[in-house]
Image (cartoon, rainbow, N blue to C red; front, side):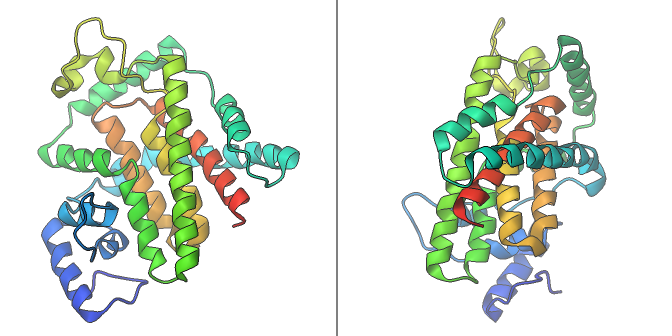
Length: 286
């Protein structure tokens, strides 16, 4: 069975990946197709890391649809906001000024009542956890920060000139770094405890001490990075935008599933990431 589409690989690699796909269950073929090759390194790159630990069966489309729609709603908001930035600043790179501005566009944390309601939703979802679901969420938490997105870009770099690929790699890295930096700064400022801090029974493996205030979860770093990457990658390879969006939704849902975040953490992070993706595309000339 041919598990690949859209990319022409040497026959030996196709055979290898076909076997891998059967072994790890249901997953998007583009993700599997990228996880090939790579020589031994002192510090393995994204390709080698995911090759060593391929994705398990992930969440169903039905499970991720709701958070996916909520995240997608941030796209239009981000585009409208970025149009204001671009009108005032053009496409000249000014990371410091943009980072300050982007942070100001993220909504204030929700009211205590809304956050309590969102926490209850996480608590209800936690009751439905399965062994397979925990395995999927753990994998997505581990690789959804940056490795998945680097792997997707590596997949496309096989088909473009080396200089272009090197430039795009640096651009994606810059977007991911900015997403982490701003989301971390906002989280430290807003001090919204993660759901598993508010209710330690949601994640006993975290060993939260009584009275702990952090880690803080608003906005979500995973969401910001995912959105920045998807916005950027979707312009580079629009024919694969649907697959990038699918993986983003998987990452977001995993954060709810294991109580790393509530919904407003994710939508705020997504808005921030979308803005960063728009910025990186503009200043890079895409």
